[in-house]
Length: 263
Image (cartoon, rainbow, N blue to C red; front, top):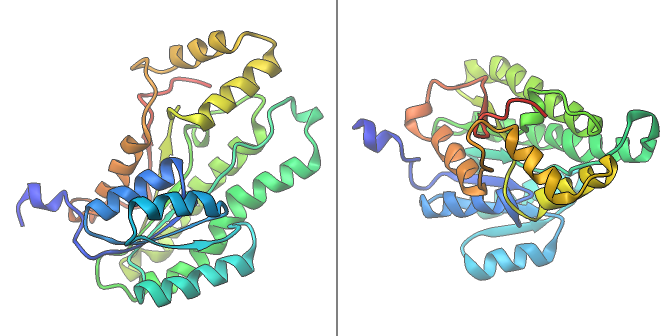
């Protein structure tokens, strides 16, 4: 195999993308489909899944709340029926969580952020690992962390805490699963263009008492390249990590962020 050919994932990979109805998850699902993978997507938003399958009918789907273990069990029943096994898990699910000083955060908001951003990753990993161990195709587990998983993030402590935890989870799984030939890596997106980041910037501006445009410029000043990344940038990294070229890449926390210098 040439170096160029090794940069492409093997056709026919069986891929599960969580929270894949929109945003980064949908970009990842589309990218794997274009790479001739067999893709299953789950999301809590049925309408988002319907929009995705209207565009790509060959993608199979499950409606599920990733923070509910029994919903995750149902997703894996669907994966077995649709794909017959699993070669790649892209654990993408996550929410922004609350914005504010730690002493003012509601306990319920903290708990919900941990349930969605961290507990769900455990639920999916624990169900996926037996299938990945049975895969003959250089199986790969990818989790979406965040640049907030390598930097402190004032006023966003629940979010940052869960994203740091995801890095620890993946580094630990890389060691645990390496002898079985399963690779585990975290992708750390930076400031990603889109509606979700617009909401985050708006909430941060409101909490700081500054205009939204001023907060947006503050975000860009923190990035060495002075630009946001796109969901497609993140999807490209996911494809690389599942390609033969990345067969010795595991236990890594890889930033796709234009080099965010601080938050």
